[in-house]
Amino acid sequence: MSKVIKVFNNKLEMGLRILVILETIYPKSFDVEMINYYDYFILHTNDIGGEESLHADVPNRYGELSVKRELIRNTTKLLLSRGLIDVEYSHRGIEYKASETTSPFLVNLEEEYTEKLKENAAWVYNKFKTYSFNDLNKFIIENKNKWGTENPYCTIGLINE
Image 1 (tube, one colour):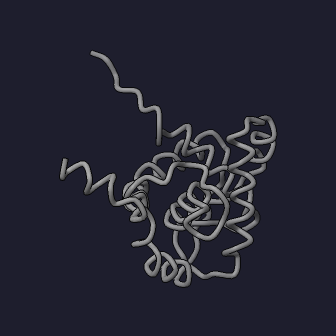
Image 2 (tube, helix red, strand yellow):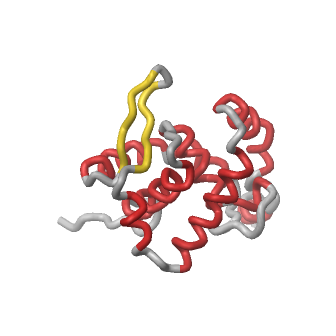
Image 3 (cartoon, one colour):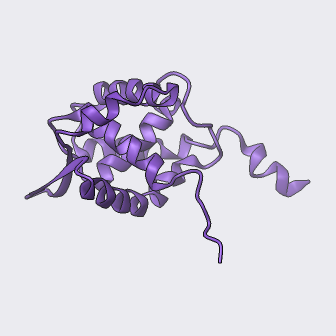
């Protein structure tokens, strides 16, 4: 029996992004949904008024907001088990926060991709730091139909050929 190895959107890749997000917002904490939003934003900065996105502008990419929650939940469990993040229980629910080992772990990662993630996370945080969850949710609802609809040929053109 061979095991399928996921190259993209696996726990390692998501873990890196979660660590970068939580380090950037420290000492604040985020729940799974806020991590999900920030993850989308740091990968697709062009969608929210930033420079070139880190990941490709694929059609219907806003769908990522629906499919990554389970991966984020599983990845936070892994990061918690390794002491790389902390969990907080409050009236808002379960939230995650950078631990004392988050920054020392990330400082050793100097790849271009990681540095760009850090840069994008800082930019996203500065853009949205005054937004409540409801404000951010409203922003997404108002804009998500624009994210991934700029190239209809990819989805419609291939069907018509």
